[in-house]
Image (cartoon, rainbow, N blue to C red):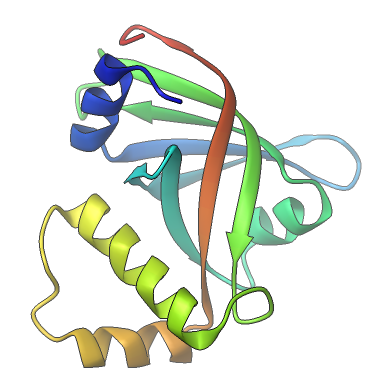
Length: 139
């Protein structure tokens, strides 16, 4: 369970740096647009990205979420939960992708059907980083 002040920060900060681990153990850093989602932070990615391939092999990760000016940040260390066409029903995946969009953008999409089609064509997955440890300037 995230502390209220951490949840408040994560609901307003959407710039993230995700650390995953390559097959050889080296760190792989990726920029992501992310947002508070359930008891963690969510973002989407396409199925051909290194971050997703790394997370499928090893779900351990760290996600630094920062304010735009980089002065305030929170780091979530934990495990990634992947929701994809292989692990969720089409309805579940559509709902999660929409919810991640809402939390990252802070708004509703003007054409959900078009959004759903684009997510399918891009073969997008939703990633939820579930923290085991949280630290930073906003904790």
